[in-house]
Image (cartoon, rainbow, N blue to C red; front, side):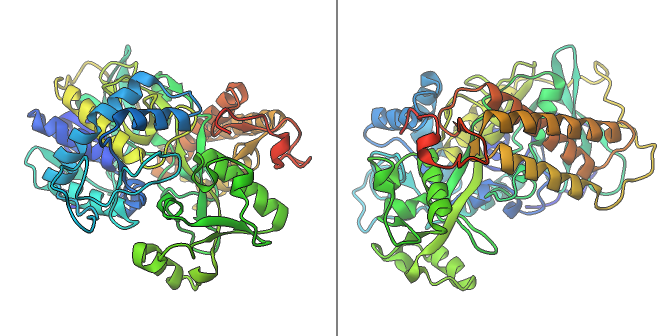
Length: 525
């Protein structure tokens, strides 16, 4: 990522907050329409975005788009919006071919022999992942995200109408009478935050992994976009549905073990060496993520450990990147890779339509911070990059149609009159927040636990709000955002139907709530 050397513009046609695939797609589409685009991102390198860490790949419709749509709906336990799913599936091939293949020339793995068909069919080595009924996932080994995001950012850097500012955070939206006019931006250079006025503002800030102790997200995933939108009055939906990936390495320096490994034949075994997934679901290791994650948690609790047995495949040859990660951590993958569930993806977020429009005028949201309706209560593997790409392109195209209007709305007055807080203040509060989220708003939840979490998180948010009234710092605002979103997750979970990612145990957390026979049945089980 290249840092712009000039001062941050005070006005732009389109302001994009976030530099993952969804944000990049929005910026590209807006620039193609002739708009001046400013991308601001907290990241200082691609590795600090969730898109970079996407392993499995990009699902796309091949010869049977109907089966792709049905797989998305089935994985969501029937809760996804069919119209949103239709948009995703119908536009998948064109978006992938246009941006990833033709514009960025992403080096997707190729099959042994090509049959001359396009990116939607042959020539590529399509993988199958959990809950997919066929091979349809384009990938680059098990490191697809980094091979997509780096060239995407380089491409944007080369476009005259796009300016990318890294190490730059949006602290608050500039809103007036139901319309968003830009954001207050902290340039990370020690100067006071300043407003950037924009014709349209696109939030692409990613997920909420920083709210949990163990997550596949980068540390920067503090729910900023969702919190800013909610505080400005935008609708936030379905944040009860927090997806946990079932196979994250459980040792020091954890990493994600791609679902594609199970798609190629790897199996899960408990500490007794027993393969257990057939006892939980007819699709065994290829069951929906929520089912596999809870099964792994059950078996870890019951037997002490779960490993991913990769002996059925040529692991080092088929997944050299993952084999390398095992070796650098001293893990002999021939004996199995120790795994555990880890927070992975937020299925809900800022409620948007099929063009990424929120219910505040000129505010758009794309990627993980948005609730498009595609995922419902549980996301199908390898659809996150695709959703970000499709909705990013659609939102960017529409966002380019507005001109900035300065003088209409006054920027919020962010006061910094009181002495700075101790260096470890935000970090200590985050420890408290994560403890509550892990214990009560994690993979398994109980009504009483959610009530306790809501009470604690409400108090925590009140404490943080008191500090932000007279102090302005990026770490404090990240803590504010995290506390806002954590409280939203807990509150919505207390009211949401127990389906998909939201497993609700009927007994208390101290009464063996992890046992699968005590959990409210899931429509996808």
